[in-house]
Image (cartoon, rainbow, N blue to C red; front, top):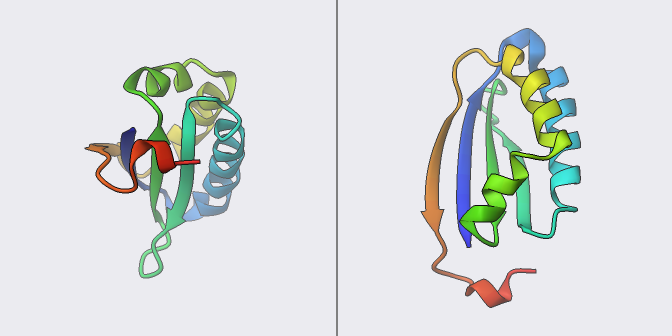
Length: 102
């Protein structure tokens, strides 16, 4: 598995628009065969901060995701709503084993 955590800070007035665009992208992403998980979480203490937890079956599946129309629509919609550039951290899977992801 290829795991990406994306950290995003959104402009305060754009939180609801960002959530709507991101939820649409997440739900469509889960229909991709290479996506095992796509979570969207919002920080409680600072609701302008979000983390996208993306789990791909392979690194290539992450690249294929960026070619989809829903990702590109999200990027075009969400980037202007961000207060700063998003950052990413890449992870490898330890547990559960790759075969136990749904």
